[in-house]
Length: 81
Length: 233
Image 1 (cartoon, rainbow over the protein chains, first blue to last red):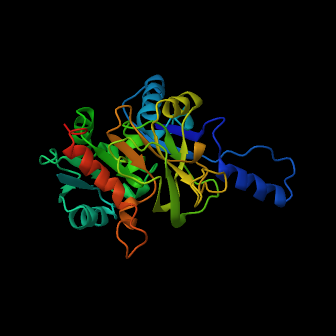
Image 2 (image 1 turned 90 degrees about the horizontal axis):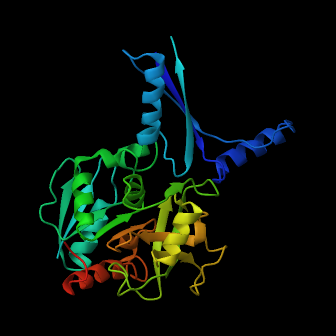
Image 3 (image 1 turned 180 degrees about the vertical axis):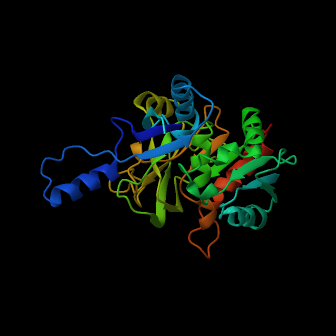
């Protein structure tokens, strides 16, 4: 089982990387592009947990280390391999 | 006065800091390996610049798990003077010793240049002897200081902004802001004033061979504050 944590820049926090990528997409002809936020995906393999427990542990990991909540948001998904 | 300079895997300004403390301010200096669990009785701690733990995850995020950080926290809580320079500043925010966080520079590039700094509060242990402006090089990719509105208001209201990026005449203008930091912030202190974090490198402009040597005043200030009993455990 894997815990997948998506970390993205917090709403309202400037994301110059996302802005640059949005500009790049538009110049390629993707005129429909609005806002782009660039973040990261962290996969954590775990064992011995129920899906519910994994979700809870994943949230704790996000809060304590994987994201810096001053500037980042995160969400947690559980993937049953 | 005895300074301890913490060396993390990836620190690369530890020797510069050691050199300035020892040979410019004529104080004692010792290196503290990050695995150590005591500070060997030092009177001040320097968290130097570099790329601790390869900047993995986020700059400074992993260094906070180094055993010595617990001791640094205890030392800071007891009133001991601590300075985090560049990566050291990032470590201090990640460890919760200073508020806010560092974002990628607004222009997305790594910036390496001299920065003029307005001494926004010259009555702190680390700034007491500083002139109105000093020059210190910056060398960072993630130095855009960010804090939420409430934290920012608190820092400003309590005089906890130590340095701001400014132009040659000392004005903190938009054009003088190299990285997009809120309110041109280049350095802040904790509520008590004994813990300073700054992105620019005062140790790289502490001798006339390297510039106007105004960075040395940061170190001389804390020595004076220590001798005057204004800071220390």
